[in-house]
Length: 314
Image (cartoon, rainbow, N blue to C red; front, side):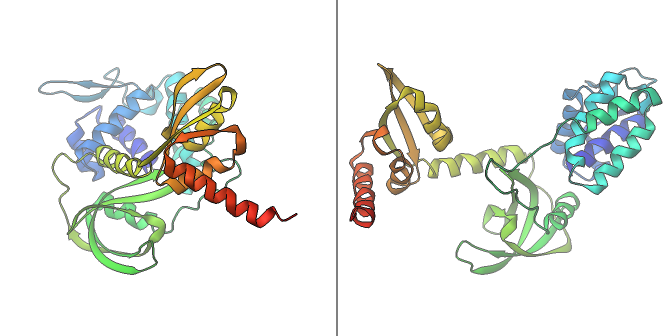
């Protein structure tokens, strides 16, 4: 987990005083890009880490003699534990790391550090929703990603059809509580939902990640493509301005207020099909007026006819 790595990077710095991103990558068996991101995350969180360019440079703790956790200020200790604390809530291993770090701090800092560790709770379940359970194979895939080992992956597709393939796991992503594996395959770059992975056997074969690969960039492309598919059909509607925000909550990023006229908002909403747009708008009844396209209006008429036929008999 990333929290484990951040702690490991900090401890590496406290021992050596100065490290390069390449040294961190080699020590923790991660990519050079991941090592740089972890070092930047420590710095952004307020830990006194800074980059020194040029020959003999690298990443240092501020104050060349400050090479252990007792060199942190109270504010810096709080920043570190605010970063690590949320991850500790769901991991016995990270909780153990937090306890060790607390013991490594000066006694006067410990109370504040413990308070910071418990100050933030990350609740990934939406209102009215049920929190998703972390898939059991995440741990196996994490080890394969870090060790850069090929995996024989058993996978159940949308229709439940199972297949098996060899993949090169590049990284894991959690989006809205759902875990995804981003991997290289014989057919190119692919993304797999981990809750559909039925088996994962780590082989002894080591692979080389593509040069310059940035997981965040790869995932950005995936998100862009999915959102493009989810917004292939747009409709223009009029809605009372006071309700435009609620409509925006339903359509998310695929909702745009075009203009506001006399207490009414002209809004463009999008979804994957005319049926999907109509299904959301049907619940608004007469509060929304659909200007177009005709396909969405036709779907609304069809849905209305079905409802009248089912419930309009008295």
